[in-house]
Image (cartoon, rainbow, N blue to C red; front, side):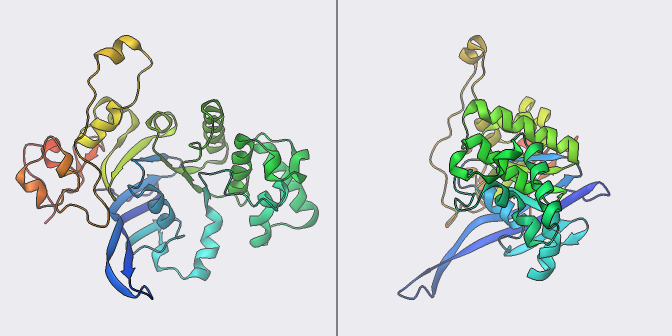
Length: 337
């Protein structure tokens, strides 16, 4: 399991986010819950980038929103700088949010089309009363310059910028209050491949310059490999494997991780031709009605009878490499009771 120490900035334990499903004319009759996040635990050290990967609908973005308390979790704890945010009121969270920011996926939809770039970048400064007048204008110009935009563009509107430039505006806005932690919610997936590399390099430079800590959410394993120190793999609301970047790519233990990595093309025709592609049977189950036990067992080629009954815990196999699969972790069965 994830452990907490003096170098930990963020510690998430047993995070659960269930959305109620109702029916009827007034939508008041409960019929079940969507288990978007179902018992997620991880920690992020100061200055580290943790990549969170998995296919669409596995709960990555919901996890990020719960960490920021944009969604209040059903249960679990989110400890940021030794304080459990889940116990905070909305007023108390406002004070902490200066230190926690988000970069959204869609640079087209996340910027207000009626506001200039300068007003968008400076909005957090106004909301939190951090700067006014000349100081405010200078800070906005400084932030635009930091992300590689000409400060003279401050009076332009979002539609006058390219996709990559719009994302830089979003990054500048996230930096405005000098945060220590940023959730990057698929920040390059809507950009052209050539612009993706520039944006990733910018984020790495900013991390080093301002001592930032990132939770980097993505479904592109190549992007995650480039920027992350450690990587957590998510499937149907649960984390199935956490390891350092090198360990995960060189020695993936969980069958789902193995299948994901087998789908990543290798830019070497000879190696690519020899490589075996892992094709998983069936479809991803619905989070409204996930399988009992290990939620991956209906598609798993290692599945044992016990896998359909008991939920596997994350087990450390050495060097911080954790996997939620007793068959892969060791010959002995290791299950949660």
